[in-house]
Image 1 (cartoon, one colour):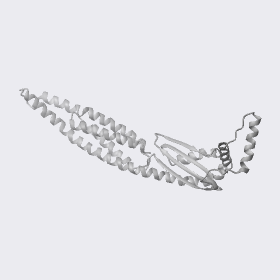
Image 2 (cartoon, helix red, strand yellow):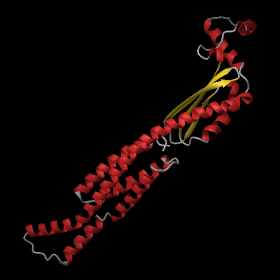
Image 3 (cartoon, one colour):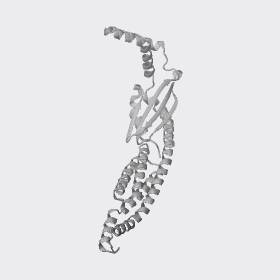
Image 4 (cartoon, one colour):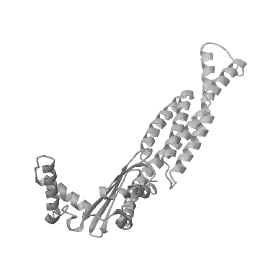
Length: 290
C-alpha cells in the first residue's frame, strides 16, 4: 500500500552541469502531473510525463528539474562579463531604437545571467540518457517515502477494520434475540392490561411475525461481513486500491444506514452509530491512499 503523499530528491553531473530532480506529491482523486523544466528543455516534458505515468496512478505530483553549472551549484549563475556585455549592449541598443528609457541595475544583470546560463545548456537529446539515471534515483526515493507512509496508514486501517468486524459480530448476536425479546415484551404489556392471551394465539403470532419481518437484518449483516472481508483483502494488495476502497466504503455506509433504520434494538443502534463514526475515520485515511 502506498500513500499519495511523498517526496524524493536526487542530483548528479551531466557534462559541466549539476542537475537536481525533485518530486513531491499530495492526494488527489486522479493523476495530475506538473512538470517544471527550463524552457530550453521543454521538448522533454512529454517524455517525463511518460516516465512518471509508469510509476504513479493517483495524486498531484510536481516534478522540478534544476540545472546549474558545477562552479555555481551553491551560489547561482556565474556572472561572466564576456557573456553579459554583448547582451547588455544589445539590450541598450534595442531600447534606443524603440525610444524606451534604459535603466540598468543589479536585478537586470542577475536576470540576464540566468538567461545566459540557461541558453548555455546542452540540448534535450544530449542529456536525456544521463538525466534518466538521476530521475530514476529521485523516483526511487519518492516511492520509498510513499511506501513508508502507506505502511503506517495500513497499520491504522487494519486495526479499524478488525474493530468494525468485532462490532458486526455483536450486532449479529444481538439481532438473534431481538424478536424473542419483542414477543416477551408484547405478552407483558397484554398482561398489564389485564388481557389474557394465549402465546400461541394467531393474532399474537401474526404481530410477532410482522415485527420479525420488519426488523430482519440477515441480508444486511451478510453483505456487511462480505464487504469487510473484501476491505481486509484490499489492505494486503500491492496494487493501488484507493479508488476501490473508497467505492466499497460507500456501499458499507449504505448497509449501516439500512440497519440503523430497521434495527428496533438500542444496542444495535448504538453499534451502528459507532460504526459510522469509525467508517468516517477510515474514509479520511483512504483519501490519501493511491
